[in-house]
Image 1: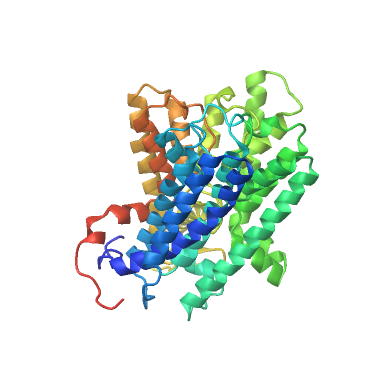
Image 2: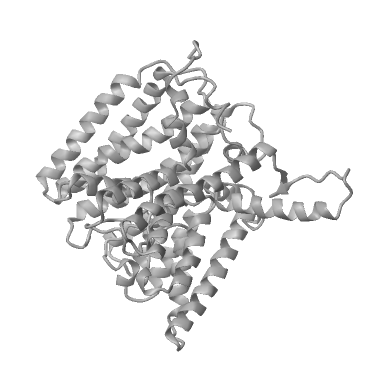
Length: 486
Protein backbone atom coordinates (compact mmCIF):
# COMPACT_ATOMS: atom_id res chain seq x y z
CA UNK A 1 0.00 0.00 0.00
CA UNK A 2 2.88 2.37 0.76
CA UNK A 3 4.81 1.65 -2.46
CA UNK A 4 2.89 4.25 -4.44
CA UNK A 5 3.28 6.82 -1.71
CA UNK A 6 7.05 6.25 -1.50
CA UNK A 7 7.71 6.25 -5.24
CA UNK A 8 9.49 9.59 -4.98
CA UNK A 9 11.51 10.88 -2.03
CA UNK A 10 10.27 14.03 -0.37
CA UNK A 11 11.45 17.46 -1.49
CA UNK A 12 12.97 19.36 1.41
CA UNK A 13 11.87 22.71 -0.01
CA UNK A 14 8.23 21.58 0.14
CA UNK A 15 8.55 20.28 3.71
CA UNK A 16 10.30 23.47 4.80
CA UNK A 17 7.68 25.70 3.16
CA UNK A 18 4.71 24.16 4.95
CA UNK A 19 6.46 23.56 8.26
CA UNK A 20 7.42 27.23 8.18
CA UNK A 21 3.78 28.19 7.75
CA UNK A 22 2.75 25.84 10.56
CA UNK A 23 5.47 27.31 12.81
CA UNK A 24 3.95 30.77 12.34
CA UNK A 25 0.50 29.37 13.20
CA UNK A 26 1.92 27.72 16.36
CA UNK A 27 3.56 31.01 17.30
CA UNK A 28 0.20 32.79 17.12
CA UNK A 29 -1.40 29.97 19.13
CA UNK A 30 1.23 30.47 21.86
CA UNK A 31 -0.09 33.98 22.53
CA UNK A 32 -3.14 33.03 24.70
CA UNK A 33 -1.14 30.88 27.19
CA UNK A 34 1.58 33.55 27.21
CA UNK A 35 -1.06 36.12 28.16
CA UNK A 36 -2.52 33.75 30.78
CA UNK A 37 0.93 33.25 32.35
CA UNK A 38 1.50 37.02 32.39
CA UNK A 39 -1.91 37.61 34.04
CA UNK A 40 -1.01 34.97 36.66
CA UNK A 41 2.18 36.90 37.37
CA UNK A 42 4.42 33.91 36.56
CA UNK A 43 7.50 35.59 35.09
CA UNK A 44 9.36 32.33 34.37
CA UNK A 45 6.44 30.81 32.43
CA UNK A 46 5.91 34.08 30.53
CA UNK A 47 9.57 34.15 29.49
CA UNK A 48 9.44 30.50 28.42
CA UNK A 49 6.39 31.12 26.22
CA UNK A 50 8.10 34.22 24.84
CA UNK A 51 11.17 32.19 23.88
CA UNK A 52 9.03 29.53 22.22
CA UNK A 53 7.11 32.19 20.31
CA UNK A 54 10.35 33.82 19.13
CA UNK A 55 11.83 30.48 18.07
CA UNK A 56 8.71 29.53 16.12
CA UNK A 57 8.59 32.90 14.39
CA UNK A 58 12.27 32.58 13.51
CA UNK A 59 11.69 29.15 11.97
CA UNK A 60 8.52 30.26 10.25
CA UNK A 61 9.86 33.44 8.68
CA UNK A 62 12.96 31.60 7.48
CA UNK A 63 11.05 28.94 5.55
CA UNK A 64 7.49 30.16 4.87
CA UNK A 65 8.61 32.60 2.15
CA UNK A 66 9.73 29.82 -0.13
CA UNK A 67 7.74 29.43 -3.38
CA UNK A 68 4.48 27.54 -3.13
CA UNK A 69 4.82 24.15 -4.86
CA UNK A 70 2.55 23.29 -7.76
CA UNK A 71 1.59 20.03 -6.06
CA UNK A 72 2.24 18.03 -2.87
CA UNK A 73 3.14 14.34 -2.99
CA UNK A 74 1.30 11.92 -0.74
CA UNK A 75 4.39 11.17 1.33
CA UNK A 76 5.12 14.89 1.71
CA UNK A 77 1.63 15.52 3.07
CA UNK A 78 2.01 12.68 5.56
CA UNK A 79 5.46 13.86 6.69
CA UNK A 80 4.21 17.42 7.16
CA UNK A 81 1.30 16.17 9.29
CA UNK A 82 3.57 13.99 11.43
CA UNK A 83 6.23 16.67 11.93
CA UNK A 84 3.60 19.29 12.74
CA UNK A 85 2.36 17.35 15.76
CA UNK A 86 5.84 16.30 16.86
CA UNK A 87 7.10 19.88 16.58
CA UNK A 88 4.08 21.23 18.44
CA UNK A 89 4.45 18.69 21.26
CA UNK A 90 8.18 19.33 21.74
CA UNK A 91 8.04 23.12 21.49
CA UNK A 92 5.13 23.53 23.90
CA UNK A 93 6.69 21.16 26.45
CA UNK A 94 9.30 23.79 27.38
CA UNK A 95 6.89 26.27 29.05
CA UNK A 96 4.98 23.42 30.72
CA UNK A 97 8.10 22.73 32.78
CA UNK A 98 7.61 25.95 34.77
CA UNK A 99 5.50 24.45 37.61
CA UNK A 100 8.30 21.97 38.37
CA UNK A 101 7.76 19.21 35.79
CA UNK A 102 10.85 17.41 34.52
CA UNK A 103 11.45 17.31 30.78
CA UNK A 104 9.91 13.88 30.13
CA UNK A 105 6.72 14.61 32.10
CA UNK A 106 6.38 17.96 30.30
CA UNK A 107 6.76 16.22 26.93
CA UNK A 108 4.20 13.61 28.02
CA UNK A 109 1.76 16.35 29.06
CA UNK A 110 2.30 18.34 25.87
CA UNK A 111 1.97 15.27 23.65
CA UNK A 112 -1.19 14.25 25.47
CA UNK A 113 -2.59 17.74 24.96
CA UNK A 114 -1.84 18.28 21.28
CA UNK A 115 -3.00 14.77 20.37
CA UNK A 116 -6.24 15.39 22.36
CA UNK A 117 -5.59 12.34 24.53
CA UNK A 118 -5.87 13.54 28.13
CA UNK A 119 -3.55 11.04 29.82
CA UNK A 120 -1.35 12.55 32.51
CA UNK A 121 1.52 11.40 34.68
CA UNK A 122 0.89 14.16 37.24
CA UNK A 123 -0.11 13.10 40.73
CA UNK A 124 -2.41 16.12 40.97
CA UNK A 125 -3.49 19.02 38.76
CA UNK A 126 -5.33 20.97 41.43
CA UNK A 127 -2.02 22.27 42.82
CA UNK A 128 -0.98 23.63 39.41
CA UNK A 129 -1.36 27.33 38.44
CA UNK A 130 -4.37 28.40 36.39
CA UNK A 131 -2.28 29.35 33.35
CA UNK A 132 -0.97 25.74 33.25
CA UNK A 133 -4.48 24.30 33.30
CA UNK A 134 -5.59 26.78 30.65
CA UNK A 135 -2.56 26.01 28.46
CA UNK A 136 -3.30 22.26 28.50
CA UNK A 137 -6.95 22.79 27.57
CA UNK A 138 -6.06 25.36 24.90
CA UNK A 139 -3.49 23.01 23.37
CA UNK A 140 -6.10 20.25 23.24
CA UNK A 141 -8.55 22.62 21.59
CA UNK A 142 -6.31 23.68 18.72
CA UNK A 143 -4.89 20.15 18.46
CA UNK A 144 -8.41 18.88 17.85
CA UNK A 145 -9.08 21.35 15.06
CA UNK A 146 -5.59 20.87 13.67
CA UNK A 147 -5.94 17.14 13.20
CA UNK A 148 -9.27 17.56 11.40
CA UNK A 149 -7.90 20.17 9.01
CA UNK A 150 -4.55 18.44 8.47
CA UNK A 151 -5.88 14.92 8.12
CA UNK A 152 -8.63 15.94 5.72
CA UNK A 153 -7.56 19.07 3.85
CA UNK A 154 -3.81 18.41 3.66
CA UNK A 155 -4.10 14.66 3.09
CA UNK A 156 -6.96 14.85 0.60
CA UNK A 157 -4.77 13.84 -2.31
CA UNK A 158 -3.84 10.66 -0.41
CA UNK A 159 -7.00 9.40 1.28
CA UNK A 160 -10.30 8.55 -0.40
CA UNK A 161 -12.33 9.13 2.76
CA UNK A 162 -10.74 12.57 3.14
CA UNK A 163 -11.70 13.50 -0.43
CA UNK A 164 -15.27 12.46 0.28
CA UNK A 165 -15.40 14.82 3.28
CA UNK A 166 -13.99 17.69 1.24
CA UNK A 167 -16.79 17.36 -1.25
CA UNK A 168 -19.63 14.94 -0.33
CA UNK A 169 -21.00 15.22 -3.87
CA UNK A 170 -17.52 14.16 -5.15
CA UNK A 171 -17.10 17.27 -7.30
CA UNK A 172 -13.34 17.61 -6.96
CA UNK A 173 -12.29 19.47 -10.07
CA UNK A 174 -10.32 21.89 -7.87
CA UNK A 175 -8.93 20.06 -4.86
CA UNK A 176 -7.12 23.12 -3.48
CA UNK A 177 -10.31 25.18 -3.46
CA UNK A 178 -12.23 22.32 -1.84
CA UNK A 179 -9.55 21.99 0.85
CA UNK A 180 -9.59 25.70 1.65
CA UNK A 181 -13.38 25.71 1.74
CA UNK A 182 -13.39 22.70 4.06
CA UNK A 183 -10.87 24.34 6.41
CA UNK A 184 -12.99 27.48 6.69
CA UNK A 185 -16.21 25.55 7.28
CA UNK A 186 -14.59 23.21 9.81
CA UNK A 187 -13.06 26.12 11.71
CA UNK A 188 -16.33 28.06 11.81
CA UNK A 189 -18.24 24.99 12.99
CA UNK A 190 -15.61 24.20 15.62
CA UNK A 191 -15.63 27.75 17.02
CA UNK A 192 -19.44 27.84 17.08
CA UNK A 193 -19.64 24.52 18.95
CA UNK A 194 -17.01 25.73 21.42
CA UNK A 195 -18.74 29.04 22.16
CA UNK A 196 -22.05 27.25 22.58
CA UNK A 197 -20.37 24.74 24.88
CA UNK A 198 -18.84 27.43 27.09
CA UNK A 199 -22.23 29.11 27.44
CA UNK A 200 -24.00 25.81 28.15
CA UNK A 201 -21.55 24.78 30.87
CA UNK A 202 -21.68 28.22 32.48
CA UNK A 203 -25.50 28.10 32.51
CA UNK A 204 -25.23 24.57 33.98
CA UNK A 205 -23.54 26.08 37.04
CA UNK A 206 -19.80 25.88 36.37
CA UNK A 207 -17.51 28.82 37.11
CA UNK A 208 -16.42 30.58 33.93
CA UNK A 209 -12.85 29.20 34.07
CA UNK A 210 -14.09 25.63 34.45
CA UNK A 211 -16.68 26.18 31.72
CA UNK A 212 -13.97 27.48 29.38
CA UNK A 213 -11.42 24.72 30.00
CA UNK A 214 -13.95 21.87 29.98
CA UNK A 215 -15.59 23.14 26.79
CA UNK A 216 -12.16 23.21 25.13
CA UNK A 217 -11.45 19.67 26.33
CA UNK A 218 -14.92 18.32 25.45
CA UNK A 219 -15.28 19.66 21.90
CA UNK A 220 -11.74 18.49 21.10
CA UNK A 221 -12.56 15.10 22.74
CA UNK A 222 -9.44 15.71 24.81
CA UNK A 223 -10.63 15.15 28.36
CA UNK A 224 -8.20 17.23 30.43
CA UNK A 225 -10.00 18.42 33.56
CA UNK A 226 -9.04 21.06 36.10
CA UNK A 227 -9.94 18.60 38.88
CA UNK A 228 -8.19 15.41 39.99
CA UNK A 229 -11.54 13.62 40.17
CA UNK A 230 -12.48 14.75 36.63
CA UNK A 231 -16.27 15.17 36.27
CA UNK A 232 -16.88 13.51 39.65
CA UNK A 233 -15.82 16.83 41.16
CA UNK A 234 -18.96 18.50 39.75
CA UNK A 235 -21.97 18.67 42.04
CA UNK A 236 -25.01 17.24 40.31
CA UNK A 237 -25.45 15.50 36.99
CA UNK A 238 -26.40 18.50 34.86
CA UNK A 239 -22.86 19.84 34.16
CA UNK A 240 -21.56 16.28 33.75
CA UNK A 241 -24.14 15.37 31.13
CA UNK A 242 -23.75 18.71 29.32
CA UNK A 243 -20.00 18.05 29.13
CA UNK A 244 -20.60 14.60 27.67
CA UNK A 245 -23.10 16.06 25.20
CA UNK A 246 -20.34 18.37 23.97
CA UNK A 247 -17.99 15.40 23.72
CA UNK A 248 -20.57 13.57 21.62
CA UNK A 249 -20.82 16.64 19.37
CA UNK A 250 -17.04 16.61 18.92
CA UNK A 251 -17.08 12.95 17.85
CA UNK A 252 -19.38 13.73 14.89
CA UNK A 253 -17.79 14.67 11.55
CA UNK A 254 -17.52 18.47 11.46
CA UNK A 255 -18.64 18.76 7.80
CA UNK A 256 -21.92 17.10 8.77
CA UNK A 257 -22.97 20.15 10.80
CA UNK A 258 -22.50 22.45 7.85
CA UNK A 259 -24.40 20.09 5.55
CA UNK A 260 -27.23 19.87 8.08
CA UNK A 261 -27.39 23.66 8.36
CA UNK A 262 -27.27 24.05 4.58
CA UNK A 263 -29.55 21.23 3.49
CA UNK A 264 -31.67 20.46 6.55
CA UNK A 265 -31.26 18.38 9.67
CA UNK A 266 -32.35 15.28 7.78
CA UNK A 267 -28.70 15.06 6.73
CA UNK A 268 -27.94 14.04 10.32
CA UNK A 269 -30.60 11.36 10.30
CA UNK A 270 -29.16 9.88 7.09
CA UNK A 271 -25.56 9.64 8.33
CA UNK A 272 -24.55 6.03 9.00
CA UNK A 273 -21.62 6.94 11.25
CA UNK A 274 -23.86 9.03 13.51
CA UNK A 275 -26.31 6.11 13.72
CA UNK A 276 -23.46 3.79 14.69
CA UNK A 277 -22.10 6.26 17.25
CA UNK A 278 -25.45 6.55 19.03
CA UNK A 279 -26.14 2.81 18.87
CA UNK A 280 -22.74 1.87 20.28
CA UNK A 281 -23.00 4.48 23.04
CA UNK A 282 -26.40 3.06 23.96
CA UNK A 283 -25.26 -0.57 23.92
CA UNK A 284 -22.12 0.05 25.98
CA UNK A 285 -24.11 2.22 28.43
CA UNK A 286 -26.59 -0.59 29.00
CA UNK A 287 -23.79 -3.14 29.42
CA UNK A 288 -21.93 -0.95 31.91
CA UNK A 289 -25.09 -0.31 33.94
CA UNK A 290 -25.71 -4.06 34.19
CA UNK A 291 -22.08 -4.71 35.13
CA UNK A 292 -22.19 -2.04 37.83
CA UNK A 293 -25.34 -3.66 39.22
CA UNK A 294 -23.71 -7.10 39.11
CA UNK A 295 -20.61 -5.84 40.91
CA UNK A 296 -22.55 -4.07 43.68
CA UNK A 297 -25.33 -6.62 44.09
CA UNK A 298 -27.92 -3.88 44.57
CA UNK A 299 -29.30 -1.26 42.21
CA UNK A 300 -28.33 2.37 42.79
CA UNK A 301 -29.98 5.35 41.20
CA UNK A 302 -26.77 6.79 39.74
CA UNK A 303 -25.71 3.61 37.92
CA UNK A 304 -27.34 4.82 34.71
CA UNK A 305 -25.65 8.21 34.91
CA UNK A 306 -22.21 6.70 35.51
CA UNK A 307 -22.74 4.12 32.75
CA UNK A 308 -23.84 6.70 30.18
CA UNK A 309 -20.99 9.05 31.04
CA UNK A 310 -18.23 6.42 31.03
CA UNK A 311 -19.53 4.71 27.88
CA UNK A 312 -19.89 7.98 25.98
CA UNK A 313 -16.48 9.13 27.18
CA UNK A 314 -14.86 5.95 25.88
CA UNK A 315 -16.76 5.82 22.57
CA UNK A 316 -16.04 9.47 21.77
CA UNK A 317 -12.45 8.99 23.04
CA UNK A 318 -12.82 12.01 25.31
CA UNK A 319 -11.52 10.59 28.59
CA UNK A 320 -13.65 12.34 31.18
CA UNK A 321 -14.69 10.10 34.07
CA UNK A 322 -17.29 10.13 36.84
CA UNK A 323 -15.73 7.22 38.73
CA UNK A 324 -12.25 5.66 38.84
CA UNK A 325 -11.59 3.04 36.17
CA UNK A 326 -9.87 0.94 38.86
CA UNK A 327 -13.27 0.51 40.52
CA UNK A 328 -14.56 -1.37 37.48
CA UNK A 329 -14.22 -5.12 37.01
CA UNK A 330 -12.33 -6.71 34.12
CA UNK A 331 -15.44 -7.15 31.96
CA UNK A 332 -16.38 -3.47 32.27
CA UNK A 333 -12.82 -2.49 31.37
CA UNK A 334 -13.01 -4.72 28.31
CA UNK A 335 -16.24 -2.98 27.20
CA UNK A 336 -14.48 0.38 27.48
CA UNK A 337 -11.40 -0.94 25.64
CA UNK A 338 -13.52 -2.02 22.67
CA UNK A 339 -15.35 1.31 22.64
CA UNK A 340 -12.08 3.25 22.71
CA UNK A 341 -10.59 1.20 19.88
CA UNK A 342 -13.51 1.98 17.56
CA UNK A 343 -13.78 5.68 18.44
CA UNK A 344 -15.84 8.30 16.60
CA UNK A 345 -16.47 9.50 13.06
CA UNK A 346 -14.01 10.26 10.28
CA UNK A 347 -13.55 14.03 10.09
CA UNK A 348 -14.22 14.49 13.82
CA UNK A 349 -11.83 15.21 16.67
CA UNK A 350 -12.30 11.68 18.06
CA UNK A 351 -9.60 9.00 17.95
CA UNK A 352 -9.73 5.23 17.46
CA UNK A 353 -9.71 3.53 14.07
CA UNK A 354 -13.08 5.21 13.39
CA UNK A 355 -16.65 4.03 13.00
CA UNK A 356 -16.51 4.17 9.20
CA UNK A 357 -13.90 1.41 9.12
CA UNK A 358 -15.87 -0.76 11.53
CA UNK A 359 -18.92 -0.34 9.30
CA UNK A 360 -16.79 -1.28 6.28
CA UNK A 361 -15.72 -4.50 8.00
CA UNK A 362 -19.30 -5.36 8.96
CA UNK A 363 -20.59 -4.62 5.46
CA UNK A 364 -17.80 -6.73 3.93
CA UNK A 365 -18.72 -9.62 6.24
CA UNK A 366 -22.35 -9.26 5.21
CA UNK A 367 -21.34 -9.27 1.54
CA UNK A 368 -19.27 -12.45 1.98
CA UNK A 369 -22.26 -14.28 3.49
CA UNK A 370 -24.57 -13.00 0.73
CA UNK A 371 -22.25 -14.22 -2.00
CA UNK A 372 -22.35 -17.77 -0.59
CA UNK A 373 -26.00 -18.05 -1.62
CA UNK A 374 -25.50 -16.40 -5.04
CA UNK A 375 -24.43 -17.82 -8.41
CA UNK A 376 -20.72 -17.65 -9.19
CA UNK A 377 -21.24 -15.12 -11.98
CA UNK A 378 -23.24 -12.70 -9.78
CA UNK A 379 -21.74 -9.22 -9.33
CA UNK A 380 -22.44 -7.51 -6.01
CA UNK A 381 -21.10 -4.06 -5.22
CA UNK A 382 -19.92 -3.12 -1.75
CA UNK A 383 -21.95 -0.08 -0.73
CA UNK A 384 -21.98 1.99 2.44
CA UNK A 385 -23.62 5.31 3.18
CA UNK A 386 -25.22 5.44 -0.26
CA UNK A 387 -22.03 5.08 -2.30
CA UNK A 388 -19.91 2.32 -3.79
CA UNK A 389 -16.76 1.53 -1.79
CA UNK A 390 -13.62 1.29 -3.90
CA UNK A 391 -11.24 -1.62 -3.35
CA UNK A 392 -8.43 0.76 -2.42
CA UNK A 393 -10.50 2.39 0.32
CA UNK A 394 -11.56 -1.00 1.70
CA UNK A 395 -7.98 -2.28 1.69
CA UNK A 396 -6.73 0.86 3.42
CA UNK A 397 -9.38 0.61 6.12
CA UNK A 398 -8.73 -3.05 6.89
CA UNK A 399 -4.97 -2.48 6.82
CA UNK A 400 -5.29 0.36 9.33
CA UNK A 401 -7.34 -1.78 11.70
CA UNK A 402 -4.64 -4.47 11.51
CA UNK A 403 -1.98 -1.85 12.25
CA UNK A 404 -3.91 -0.67 15.30
CA UNK A 405 -4.04 -4.22 16.66
CA UNK A 406 -0.32 -4.72 15.96
CA UNK A 407 0.67 -1.51 17.76
CA UNK A 408 -1.48 -2.46 20.76
CA UNK A 409 0.26 -5.83 21.09
CA UNK A 410 3.76 -4.41 20.59
CA UNK A 411 3.11 -1.66 23.17
CA UNK A 412 1.48 -4.03 25.67
CA UNK A 413 4.40 -6.47 25.99
CA UNK A 414 6.88 -4.00 27.59
CA UNK A 415 4.29 -3.18 30.28
CA UNK A 416 3.96 -6.88 31.02
CA UNK A 417 7.76 -7.16 31.14
CA UNK A 418 7.84 -4.46 33.83
CA UNK A 419 5.26 -6.36 35.89
CA UNK A 420 2.16 -4.23 35.27
CA UNK A 421 -1.28 -5.78 35.69
CA UNK A 422 -2.17 -7.24 32.25
CA UNK A 423 -5.71 -5.83 32.03
CA UNK A 424 -4.75 -2.40 33.35
CA UNK A 425 -1.73 -2.29 31.03
CA UNK A 426 -3.89 -3.21 28.02
CA UNK A 427 -6.41 -0.55 29.04
CA UNK A 428 -3.69 2.12 29.28
CA UNK A 429 -2.12 1.24 25.93
CA UNK A 430 -5.47 1.27 24.12
CA UNK A 431 -6.40 4.54 25.82
CA UNK A 432 -3.18 6.14 24.57
CA UNK A 433 -3.41 4.74 21.03
CA UNK A 434 -7.10 5.69 20.74
CA UNK A 435 -6.24 9.16 22.16
CA UNK A 436 -8.86 8.71 24.88
CA UNK A 437 -7.19 9.52 28.21
CA UNK A 438 -9.15 7.26 30.54
CA UNK A 439 -6.62 5.72 32.90
CA UNK A 440 -6.49 2.49 34.90
CA UNK A 441 -3.79 4.00 37.10
CA UNK A 442 -0.73 2.94 35.09
CA UNK A 443 0.20 6.48 33.99
CA UNK A 444 1.76 8.05 37.08
CA UNK A 445 4.83 10.03 38.18
CA UNK A 446 6.63 6.77 39.06
CA UNK A 447 6.04 5.08 35.71
CA UNK A 448 9.32 3.92 34.13
CA UNK A 449 10.67 6.44 31.55
CA UNK A 450 10.63 3.77 28.82
CA UNK A 451 6.92 3.13 29.40
CA UNK A 452 6.19 6.87 29.41
CA UNK A 453 7.96 7.05 26.06
CA UNK A 454 5.88 4.17 24.69
CA UNK A 455 2.66 5.90 25.71
CA UNK A 456 3.86 9.14 24.08
CA UNK A 457 4.60 7.23 20.88
CA UNK A 458 1.19 5.55 21.04
CA UNK A 459 -0.56 8.91 21.39
CA UNK A 460 1.19 10.26 18.29
CA UNK A 461 0.63 7.04 16.34
CA UNK A 462 -3.06 7.03 17.20
CA UNK A 463 -3.61 10.70 16.42
CA UNK A 464 -1.81 10.41 13.07
CA UNK A 465 -3.43 7.02 12.33
CA UNK A 466 -0.04 5.23 12.24
CA UNK A 467 0.62 5.43 8.50
CA UNK A 468 1.94 9.00 8.63
CA UNK A 469 4.52 7.96 11.25
CA UNK A 470 5.52 4.88 9.23
CA UNK A 471 6.08 7.07 6.20
CA UNK A 472 8.06 9.56 8.31
CA UNK A 473 10.56 6.88 9.37
CA UNK A 474 10.69 4.96 6.08
CA UNK A 475 14.15 5.33 4.42
CA UNK A 476 12.49 5.68 0.99
CA UNK A 477 10.85 8.88 2.22
CA UNK A 478 14.19 10.62 2.61
CA UNK A 479 16.48 8.87 0.14
CA UNK A 480 15.86 8.22 -3.55
CA UNK A 481 14.95 10.03 -6.74
CA UNK A 482 13.05 13.28 -6.45
CA UNK A 483 10.78 15.15 -8.79
CA UNK A 484 12.65 18.14 -10.14
CA UNK A 485 9.67 20.47 -10.42
CA UNK A 486 8.36 21.81 -7.07
